[in-house]
Image 1 (cartoon, rainbow, N blue to C red):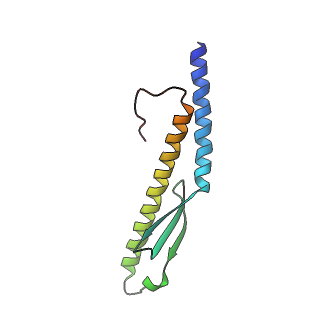
Image 2 (image 1 turned 180 degrees about the vertical axis):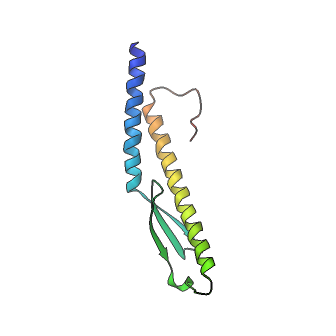
Image 3 (image 1 turned 30 degrees about the horizontal axis):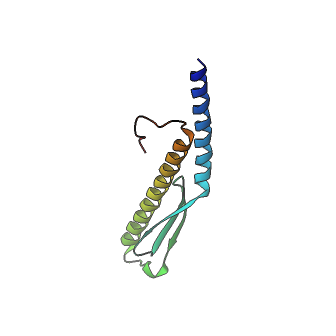
Length: 108
């Protein structure tokens, strides 16, 4: 019974650490770019878009579709980097929190 209680307590600690990690992710910044850096999208580590920067030289009223495509590509890259950062931090935290090696691979 004591082992079960200890394991439950450890899991609660891990849950608390993961919640703290989610807050830390919101303070981190990742960037995605497209068009050789002509469009940059910044997101926080949770994948929330915070800023879009567009080089004025690519703004053309006759080719709005290209600009739209570049923004989408840059956003996707920023969100991908945010997800990778989140997974990396979660994996590190789980490895630190586990007092013993897991008999299986974590899904991230």
